Length: 413
Image: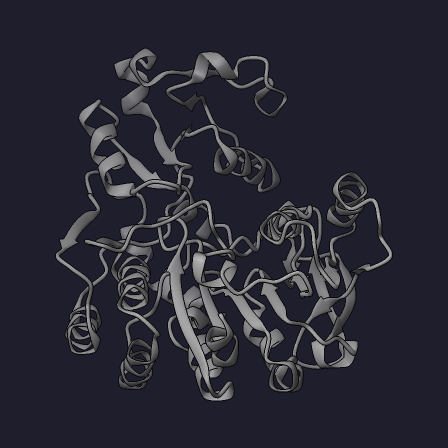
């Protein structure tokens, strides 16, 4: 059991406690290094009142977008069901294949008995959670919880890991997290990192003035796109269906030197190949690899069939090849890593490549507590003369990405 899983288990006394409300906190301005250190001490001293949310009551889903569809697939996979789906646009969703057989209701159409009789699982991460929870409770829903906190209670049978709880911070954690906060290249990074920590550690929603959460530019923040040229060698690790590669092409006007897409899930890879045929008809400079990335050569158990949640996991039924990026003989200028928690191992397996070719790096850090400080500190201590940024691209502690920008490219830009 990892430290975050143990923390979730230890917090289980708070599971599903009706009436326990999440707290929002608004902070003026952006924190400098000294401000960030003070706020970190507050986080370290705070007590988390929340824990994983059990499926011990009838469930309903709020939100029928991408996360809502994932939530439905998740519940099917773990053998649970839900009573109905609440969405402001419920009428427009009737007949959609993704919601076939489901009861779809607008909030105002849910009876008082139904509101009191279910645990409403919020499947929205593209807007602040606390105002939404407050509004739903004001509408009469008695028991409201984030979907990822529900998913956390099923970790023994499903590897989806976006709901982890950071354990209490040790003196080492505080010291190293302080180093990372001081090492970011701007105050917005400090704000977003603290926002991420506040949710993971305390389940509090901190919002900093001047630090908006942007949901449409993950991996392609302006600081990255300003550096992209027409001769990039792009490694898309965790390529899924190719959406990030397609965005990369849009940002570069379709010009590139080479694209290497890495996707170990066979179902995802088949869809990826089909999508590439649509928007990349000339495949002469494109490669698709079927391995997982890790720190060393070997094999590992892989859980396939979960869409973008497929990952290396002991809950899987088969084994796949794991390879370090250093063994792939690539010369990347831009590396994107979205590996459901395996990012730090993959970075360690790419150390020589990173040092030799000094690419732009964009790595997700929200799937486990490596994102508290271990992944960014490893990057900061390994890659000299880089500018590092932290950006949150969704809420509830998800969508967090660390960016590494080589200073020589910043100078050229």
